[in-house]
Image 1 (tube, rainbow, N blue to C red):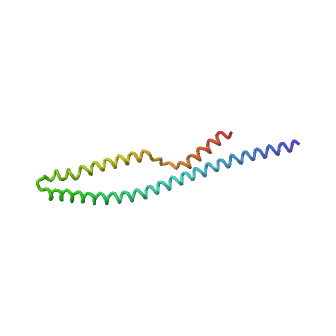
Image 2 (image 1 turned 120 degrees about the vertical axis):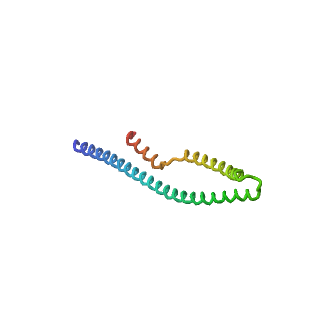
Length: 134
């Protein structure tokens, strides 16, 4: 009977030890997954940023040339107006639009969450379970 109790204690100890080892392995795997998700998100963000930068620079140069064209077209159609008024009439609406777009971008960035929510939630849940297995 004593051997049976020792055997059941050993198997219970092995079982608990196995559960703890499995939980530790699960946390390691989830941390690795979280790290990989962050790397993937950063890579995708970098690729998107380069495309946005290239497109923005090209659009900026083209937009500048179009604005100059509009100023001179306005000056040509209304020769009595000084050139500075033509620049003001073309530049003011563009400045207002740019300010509105900038403000919308700031609001959008404030609402972003850069962490992978599902991985963080699962990791917190597992840590909470290991810390308090009840």
